[in-house]
Length: 323
Ligand SMILES: [Zn+2]
Ligand SMILES: [Zn+2]
Image (cartoon, rainbow, N blue to C red; front, side):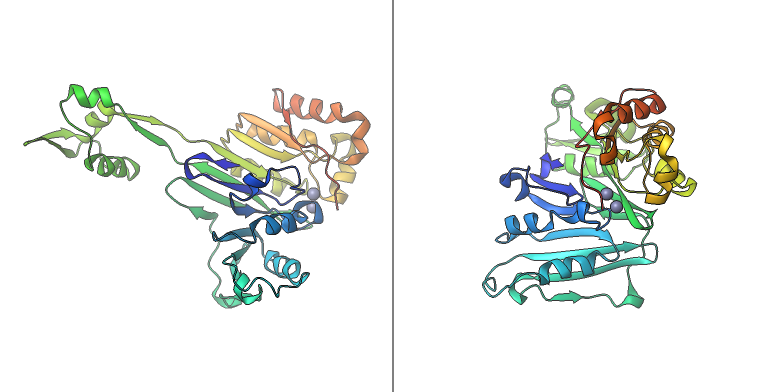
């Protein structure tokens, strides 16, 4: 996902990344991994190779054992030539009982340093990243092992209507930064806001000023949920977590007729995917990650999901080898 305003990119899962242009991979600052089955983590090496010379830290988020998995990947190579490289990798392992953190520095040949003892883990309360532009949340799901579902919610945008300012005979300036900050902070509508206007000062009700000069557009929400067992608990959790998403990327591994197999293999069905998206009020459902057994009958998966969703679904990179 490209973050246009910040000129950087984030990844959901580290599957096969060979198809991504190198220039885009080098913009990656964060990877949000659902779990470390090989089809979701095999791209780590490709990412690392492209980022080795980068001065920007790389953050990898995933289930609790992601720290051991990153450490294991880094142990698989010989690192005598990188002591002058600036790359730092931070890994964050998420579980219901807290968030572990470890860092790996190129200058120390990627020797892991886990800075939080097991007993002092940061509590996990759902929000993993929050900055001025967006919030990333996680939900812990069951896939025989833990599988993390991810969502990213963009903050709303505030645009100022310049012609309205001209009409009011006031100029742009630092007061607009304060004004926008107060909108984001939910300042009371009836409080008085002071606008500098040359030698004068104009006082106006905050709500009235907002209506006159601010154009507020809501941001988007995108959710990404992969391998999950078809249990009522998972279904309930995913539905709540993905509620109101503009786009939901969801696995549709089996057909409903193979529900028994879906339970054994801890995967969702196309029908379940469609029903989750419908109940969560999702605008666009993107299904992916189908069992290779449907290679000849792929249309059946999107038909089943579309029928359950009540609208046509999108298909995204359907076939990945499952492990
Ligand atoms: Zn899996
Ligand atoms: Zn998988």
